[in-house]
Length: 299
Image (tube, rainbow, N blue to C red; front, side):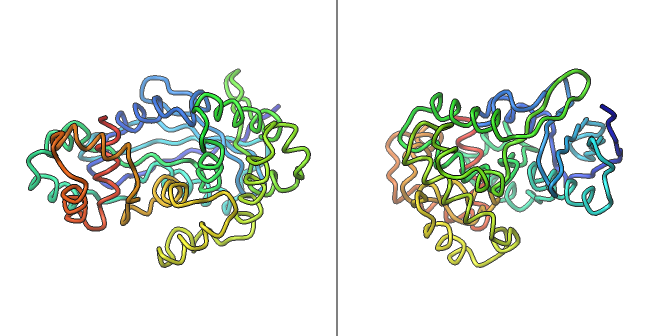
């Protein structure tokens, strides 16, 4: 089948190290095997604007002057509106517009954290590709092993996701909220084989299918958190995963993140108390999510 393509360049906010983004994407278990990473090239599919699309990114710049060349793929002509939406999705997914200079200035005043900062210098947060995918993973991953959660996710992708083939490789999209909603609960149950998770997934799909994504990304964070926690199956932990990894809301941390606490002890010493760690994180202000992201990435 014929593929339509569009090419161009993106200019991330420096410093930006694409190799670190690729390394993180390659080790991020929730999206394992859902993209191709070859050298300094990244290829992935997405369902967007009611169209199955894919994008390929290749590094052409430096950390100080970053440039990513892109190729967009589709089986139908890519209209300007769709092109713009996909480029916005790519930039959001890889946090290309995040300006980390103030974060780095704060980090250099934190002697224990400085080595972590140096290790990951130029790493912009790699999110889930869509906010709905992040919320879905939060529901699927509750109280079960990551392996079992990934099996459930794979079933959804295989049964509901769309496929686009590029250079002999098939790329599958994670379903949109509307696609899950249209399945109906019983069909979803036949895929997940877990009634509670199926009910939660359906509640998440119904909520995300009707929400304005701009509200989630830019609205008052307390209102967004309240909206999330009104969804059946979304608790405090899941809401914070969505805020940070699905929406890039880096200004707040969960107060019940035991894994972050354990990782932070490797940086600040095993004797540090939670109260002291909260004071340190608060010093990072709007960048406290980035502080946590770097600590967890190096854990």
